[in-house]
Amino acid sequence: MHDTFIPIHSGGSCAGLGHLPERPPQLQGDTKELQRLIDALQPVVQAELGTAEPVGAWLRALEVSRDEATLVLAKELGCRGRVVSMAAFDRLKTLLHDTDIFVRFEPG
Image (cartoon, rainbow, N blue to C red; front, side):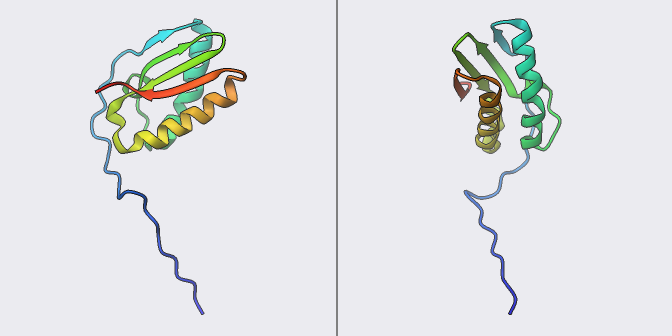
């Protein structure tokens, strides 16, 4: 007897990203810490997107203080935004101990 595998899809397929407009993200906090976090996030986000998008295409803002971090992602991430945001949150959680982490999308 052979096993039959039936793929399960949640919410249909996700088409290609299309064009992600690139613009400089708004950064607030210690410059070295911000760069460390961006460097750690970039490969994680790119792996989820399946493409090597520049930071300014997916990151809109990153604010880091002593006890709180807020990451704002581009609304243009579309249907891939959920997995990107979860992966980014998980990565930040490993880097920022005892810090409240918020991941959201830019309005619009």
